[in-house]
Length: 282
Image (tube, rainbow, N blue to C red; front, side, top):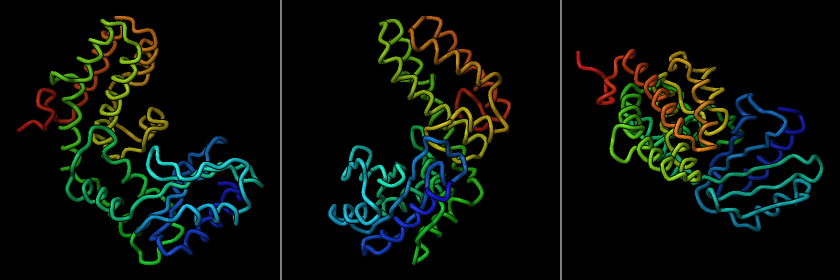
């Protein structure tokens, strides 16, 4: 992270720390795990015990030097504020998380081993990789320690058991929905269903490799870098699949079948039964 980004992030953290509603603050996103590019912004996660008044948030923007453009009080993906710093032009993204809610999400995954439909361990990855700026009671450090433990085998199995069948084995599977969408020539539906399929597909890939899911960005790049066990020809097959989805050609279904066959082959090699999505009983 550049010195300008670091200075601004630290300064904002210090101002948020003054607020009584704040439990902890951490730098997250690409700038916390060394994968930032020139387009990357500052992602500051503010964990709270109660809502911070909008006036207090506006005051922080003003005290930090103001903004050329600001959108405060956003709620589209949860509460947040975004603005462009007036002095540097840096984009700032403040995301507010209820501390109790986040604690429940981490415990649900890391202790109770509950799977979700795609992106199961994303919050765990975020907490694990975050750079803690403020954490007076050690609450966030405790969650981070939990996320840095050895990947639970029960979680690994549950993610695969939950996400693998929805790819094509059950009646409402993504593959079956894609087939209907292709036959209808419904490009929007093809896009939606393929996005859902890939969410579950990558949840299986990262779980199989005992890797926390890194989130929606750079998925292919990070899977290739972090996962030793991958389906044969995965990258090329995925690129072909995405290109075919843009036109909705029937060949898309053939490519999808091959793409999923190779995942099943990998699961079988790793001791899972593709027909049950669970480890084979020896």
